[in-house]
Length: 114
Image 1 (tube, rainbow, N blue to C red):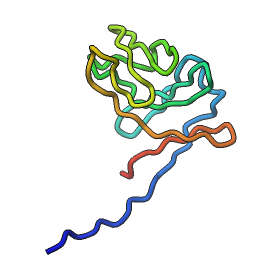
Image 2 (tube, one colour):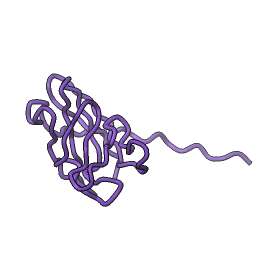
Image 3 (cartoon, rainbow, N blue to C red):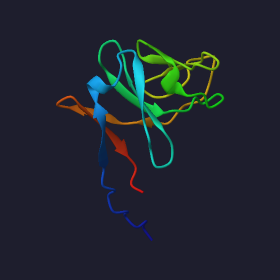
């Protein structure tokens, strides 16, 4: 017997904020249903979104310093890559990453259906 095909899950994009609402080299916190989401803006105006929790000790990544495409956790200075949420070696672990799109200066996050 073959496996049953699952119906496609609809992608849910939710407006988070305007790009201008995020400080350059900083973050803005968006309240999520299950956890807070840190929306980052780097010096090149690229926008990324991660769970606002360092994979090491749960520090608030939104309060860290953005440099390039990384954020330094404010608790123990772990560097977390903004593209994928993973810690830079020798540290290990990943924060959940959220897909982001920017349209006409508005930031949208892709969230899993409830």
